[in-house]
Length: 121
Image (tube, rainbow, N blue to C red; front, top):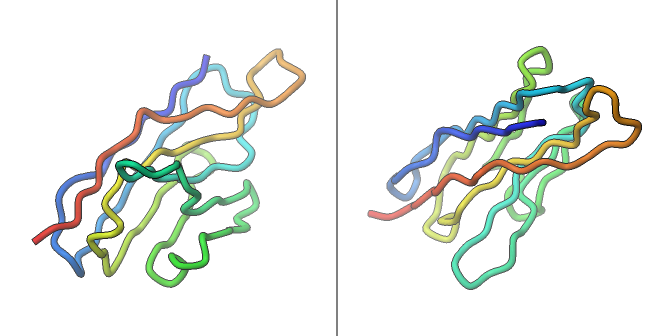
């Protein structure tokens, strides 16, 4: 019913920048919070950043200042600008969206397929 398609991952040198995008589509009545998690090999999935429909943001403490989350509500799209990237930022990045599907009375959380970010020289 709802699909999230991510783009923007890749290989970048330490100190570089990347911008991830995630667009939600399908039978959407409304999108509430959106955001990003990441998972490095051998680690659990961890929060990166979230943003509500009115623009309130929340970051993992260690990432605020280097990462910035934003969204385009009419396009149901969330972005993650990543600056001053470090090798330890290497992970698969997953977007999510908390969505009210048309005709449903409760929200559901949907996930993107994940995009690889590799920070290496």
